[in-house]
Image 1 (cartoon, helix red, strand yellow):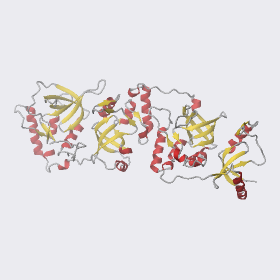
Image 2: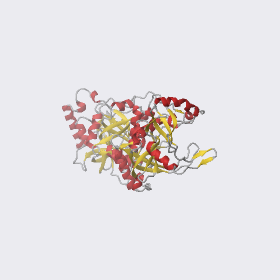
Image 3: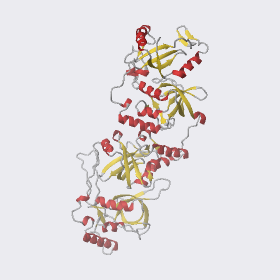
Image 4: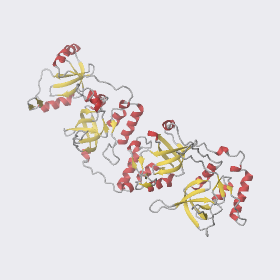
Length: 600
């Protein structure tokens, strides 16, 4: 048995006034930590050891880094004694007297449940249940409290309670598991089902150590979707708290430490177990955000199973109230009227996998970029692999053609709902980045389907990662992250391990000799299918023929439209009258639409 009785060389305190506190933690069957009431920050706390009794020592993990480390198992009935006190005392008010204080500062005394000594005597309850033994060697005959403990112990022995029962108590020793060989498989095997647990330690507001029941796995769990201020460890080993780190830790401790909870283990990236802790009194993740103790983090938001929109709403509430970590928050100013923020428009052209040209109700054409997604792209080395070959992004970048076709087939000529999320300012060229004009970034939906989310879910686009303080993002950013996570898990598109699709498209639109060779074949074929890829003028088009996988220039027979402006060797050729109107007319009718044609 592990003794927590006072050593012989200690002296009784001159007086034992009654003190009160809240039980924060039960260390063992005979030691607790009590705290005061918070006043402007985390309250002071102290350890109180129960006088005159012994309880079994709890299991301890061996210190890491030592040669041949060996874990110490539970002593018989140690966990049951701890649990008896935990269920009775955690979060409750107790009163206590400190009878002895050692030279090392350890305090021993009597603890009562409630505000006065009329409440339950905790030491007596333990002894009565056979979960602790009485230290009889130091008992004075005239002490009624000690005599009462001895009487209760004799009764427990006679009744064969607890450790006095037959069998030795080996069945009460837990098989502790401090490591998991394959955390990812372990998490996946639970299928996101709630598992019973006890929170054994709170590292900071969003990271806890939990004992999973009934198999007694002791695991570190990081709350999905959020991050609290942390404690930075300095070179000398001291910990320096970030602003509000101590307050966030106390917020979580006072609600979860040594409470019975359920945990949904949601993911395990890079050996980090992400989860959500469920408690009858509320969701700690949402509460931390609402009270300004945490911020949303995008990288783990996608695996959160309880509704990411609730977390964003809780964070938004804290920002609006400017509480704690958001005390200096400045909301971005809206630079668009409501009528310019939401509107219905007709899709005229898909520029690439993340942009399109839409026709407004006013008749104006406007280029819209899908918020927070990035189209397929190719790295520099791949792009420059064949310098003699002209680079054509639509066909040469893997999955760019599939992404464009997905948008074209779904959107061309259709009316869509556009919600502008942000305007990205123009940027100048950098050392490794090109210049970008101002971009209108929006969420586009049709029939209730978010087009960006659909693209990402098929693996035809990826989600842009932002700095945590960057609010310029899609209004459905969390749905995009979740869609990307599904695409990665299912190996869709860009995330597939299969060979990338190759599109060998012959462009004979500018090669007279090849066009002449190809002409008889097209004439014999009669009516053929094609997609209008480009409109040069009202009567001059570039067609993509999917069956023949080639591009041709096509002139409408019997008519000639005014020529548009174009670059010539001698300079810019001026547009003829009505050329722009003719070109726009043809574009609205056939651009990027599936058509049929025949040659004369």
